[in-house]
Length: 61
Image (cartoon, rainbow, N blue to C red):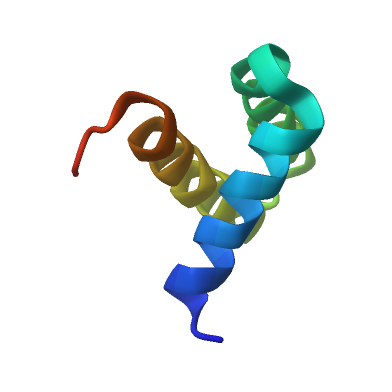
């Protein structure tokens, strides 16, 4: 599985596990990673957030 497919799978999992609270969960993860100084983690969760938005809103970026 390539990185893009992994991010899609992660976005789907977040949506399934957190439902309508998924955007807040994603924002909390990004904030925690920023505070921890984990820039790679921030980048990963931003990519997950983009795919989640595409998944739930049908937007393409």
